[in-house]
Length: 222
Length: 308
Figure 1 (cartoon, each protein chain N blue to C red):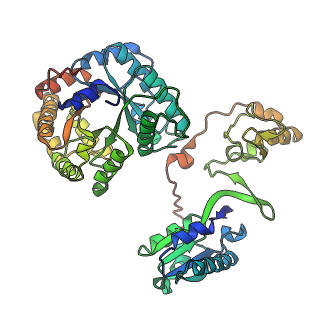
Figure 2 (cartoon, rainbow over the protein chains, first blue to last red):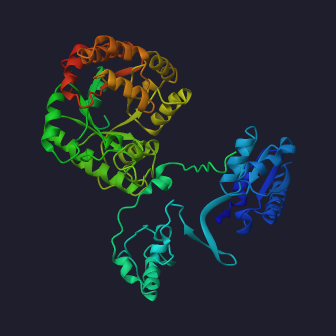
Figure 3 (tube, each protein chain N blue to C red):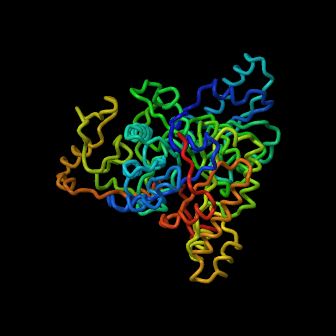
């Protein structure tokens, strides 16, 4: 899923300064799963904003709404019925949400209420970790099911650097050295010899480096 | 004086300046650099040394700059933010200035997809605007980006590029204004073929008073052939080649197209000399360094002034 962090309340408050009516807009997609942008969080943020606005002595009204997904025009369209009543939208979907909303409703100011951080998963309740960098050419099966592109701080493809110590990365003792994990895993599977192969230079065209990406499925297009 | 480079001195003295351009070889062929440099010696204030232009790997710009210095020419060290992060940029600037390089041109750089290693990662840690501001900070405040003191600060004349023909046109003067605010001392523009559009651009630039805050050099590149003109018109992003130019080259005939291209370049320089806000010309005779003299001489710009 796409994982995000709530922006500080003060930052959001500054965004909506002088706005008469503000809609806090949630999304039932990834951000609901990672507890940052679903219906529940819309309620929490709206309440916090109402209190903060009152404290400031502003007359701002705060509305609440949660769409099925903000990354799909079909659901964004649902806003058409009453969006005109609002002066601003605070979207707490991933970065796609505020863009889709402002593309559909160019006359309204749309603010991001969360910071989109990474593609990852939950290790346990309340703990998420990055697992994918969306490089566009998945190779995890060669590395014991672990991704050195997303999880090695240097995206090394040919083994741990000299900074690996006690299974931890040189940048931070709280960060696992993924290459340590890869070696252990491959050893256990009896596949260590596969790592002897020198990986050639990677083609980054499929990643963000090749420019913004677009996928067209002719079989699905209408 | 910020750097005391020849280019800076000539511009400060109020002369109409001329700069040239030299592309380093696709290898470590020193003789090739010396050979090209010889054609430019004495006919320009300084020479831009491109930094892996069009994202094709070449001899590093700073090294070619040093060869020029040794040959008695003044280089303009082009630095793109495509291949170096903030560590590399600051380090290379310190290294280059330690070797005696005094002019720096801060650029974004063509995306690597245009070049001969399209599969590469891109860097773009800073953008060209931020790099201009950082160069100024290193020079004026004698500090790194992180505010730590430098042990020896670069004395540089800071340059940047401007493309009046990129879209959206209405934003181009504002982008130039941002570069001026960031700290650029001089600007070299994209090759100008559409003189009417450039005149309109300069009018807006003059209205903003930008010509009083930095020196603006108009870009001139002679067309070698009809093919080159058609290629530039069609395939070079942000290049504006009016049909009239293609027609003139075509009408001249294959044998005389190059002469016509040089004639057009000379006419362009004459027009630029008369235009308010234009402080000089940047003559980019790409892989045609030996013809640069004809153009500059033809435009009545030789001999170059000597300013101490």
